[in-house]
Image 1: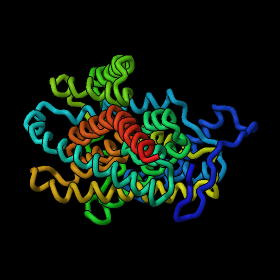
Image 2: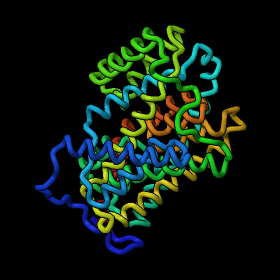
Image 3: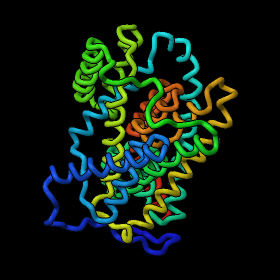
Image 4: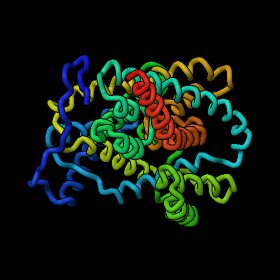
Length: 374
């Protein structure tokens, strides 16, 4: 790989063998303890979205310092399914009148995806010196797992793609809540204002939402729905809320727990890496994330008023900070969570379906042109 950038030659990210890794249960307890501790500190300090940001930042720092922390995939899946149900609760019976405005938002998002991918690719390829395939799939604004698999199939470095996407999401998730509080003057609370205690949730409503979580995942997974653990429960929850079968708001205990797990899982992606090895990639990934945030902000500022959309909601719908994470911020801000969630689902689906095909066609064209010149 041609890895010469503004920082000089980028170091290899080949994994180090570590035979002394602690048993999984100890790594899990360590991760949860670190995440809860960080979340508690951030909540005490009054930070926005404290349980997720506190867990994310403390676990990331601990991972880069050498701690081997983890979150089991099953636990993360359960919490994401719970978040899907919560996001689905934003789809009320009155939402029909709002859906008509979403078409224009989808059009803005589609155009922004193209611009973002072109500029991110140019930044990573020509500014940072990544090879063509790695730059392309690292700059795709969504679909981490799918972009790693597709990139590796085209000869890209999957470790770099993973780190770029994880850093992008980390930076966006960390910056956006403070942006709203500091620059927009909008308070981002620790938990959604509509949240109630789990003990206050009626038994029927609780059982109905639990059924949405389980059945939604079981239905969506075999159908290979993007982000099945989130989208399946969200769709079923939206259906029962639109039908008026329940109007129960999300319990704050589950929201706090889900924030800790999501933040810890994201921070644990950096386990096994050291700051000395990855700092150039962190800066490059952060630069890519900032570029995408600026583009999303410009699009929201240009089109929100003209399209009659809430600017905060449109910004959250356009910034590629992760469906789960942006949905949580939308819930906390009490903006149009339904539109935010729907547009992120469409963004991820579009990236997964179109990006690999587009790269294959472009790569073949460039190879033919290079062969003809030779």
